[in-house]
Length: 238
Image (cartoon, rainbow, N blue to C red; front, side):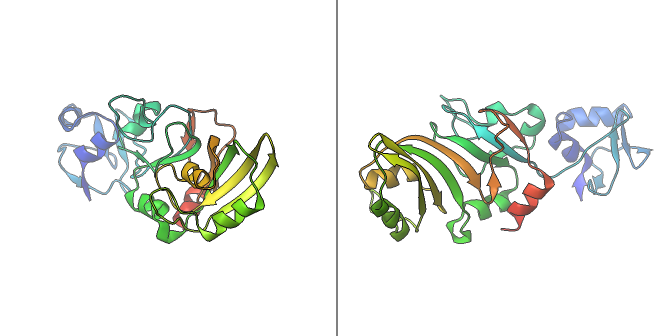
């Protein structure tokens, strides 16, 4: 059970004071009856709520997929740079969502955004072994020994040994390489640092999959959409 004013405020119908005014003006209905008290306790998942004659589409959580663009930070707020939350509409901002994990400022691709804290924890915790798949372009030729090193667990510059990772070579020659990397952690600049440890540099990095959810290629960089019911079920089955 939740207070009516809290439910409507969280859904973007204004502050609690503004919701109180809506109730006072008899613009709010609960199950066909005019609401008279903005602090009344209701079950928003079972009640039919109307504001100004329009049915309120209640939901506790939102789940978004964004194709994160270059130059935008994976945060809810930043003093200097544009954030991924800045890119979404106000109808979603009222839910106070946050990015699931992070993508580096210059990394593009699949970023999940939600206000479901429990799901967020499961997706980013290494103990759940959630695959994060990246497409990367490397400045040198990637070789079989690099694949073996990734499988054994790369030791980063600070001495941390990564969990075993899968490295697949898509193309490799003297001009550089294209690879796919699958990791189950999210250390700071991890993929870039893993390649640095084997004497190579990442020149382009894009996340293409997270927890079995693939990036929607119809999304241009900076665009986003809600996850489908099927995609949400995949994530919640982890």
